[in-house]
Length: 505
Image (cartoon, rainbow, N blue to C red; front, side, top):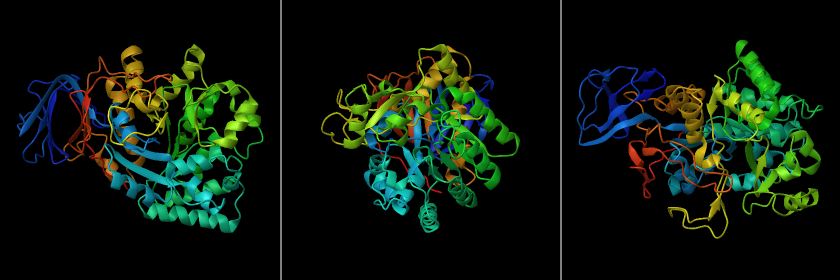
């Protein structure tokens, strides 16, 4: 059993009662250095012991000898809000999938929809600066979920400079979302890179007053766009220093690319000066976004370090051939998702940027899981397994956490299993827990914590999703529990399991 917060790595039994871990009992003679758990036990009555050596008994006992019991993975960066998307993430060890970079606004609408439909995983949302700005500055309809946000990403109406009344209206919408339970403020400022830096600081102050983080898709770096109003990395560091906000830097490699080392150094400096800054990364050299995104305009591609041929449409696999075709796609279907190849995973130097970001001590693992794009009519939302070829996404949706375990623990030995699990559980929980008490009960295997648990074989766990076959589930997970309810049992998804609960401020 692994508990990253306490460093416990030992043979143990884990008891669960009514969705809560009620006891953790070391096996007789077990050494804390032994990284295997012989059993996960459903306890009939609450226990209070932790790390005792009392044997545990229960109404049901699940023998998982030879496997690892660990906290369920907490994904701070998931745009995969549907039941089908959650199922792919469950088979990647995720038990809590949070939409924090883009966020959604009005956030109450997002929580109501997820609650009405049911979700396999715990879910939650930040307040979306972009969607609030679309309404307050761009006079676009407020809401409509992620699909509406993607469709409007490239619309210049919401990207223009805000007047004082518009900025006040924007901040008021964000205040309402925070009052409705939002987990912070998501700022995809990279999609509106010419906004005033003062607006960014005003939003950071709002989040800081609520004791909640900001989650930022950074604007361009000065190396990429010399006349950018402020360097994207310096802006995030400055906000942490000036406002006291916990500033979370989303998918650092995908925006920093071959400048990742410089960006990590900026964040290290900010932390050394007392700023609360965290970052995340995923183990892939390609991103995914709507083809209408500002930085995919043909005239901006060189600044992004991209060539038109680096853009591949998700739905069809078409590699964009020239600027004329790109302009056509942006005009006719701006919300269509496209894969962006920004680092070459087969090139050792490029792969090293990905590795250094993921191995940095302040980095948590975040998938940036994407919505599924259906290649034909969408099937019943509860259908499983997905019909072959019916949907495409980015492989990170199905494989991020398993790829991290496979590469950095088993293949490279760059992280211990306990360290790797901590980057997917306890460290993400710490980003939120000062303002979101529910996260203090997640990311840990301790009495009193939520029974969000994964049971996996470290010798087998690994990703299978590829850019050509993006919805292949990962392997190696024997069981995944959300609030004590099996979502994956004996290696198979449980189709009727929808135990996910809302995580709110």
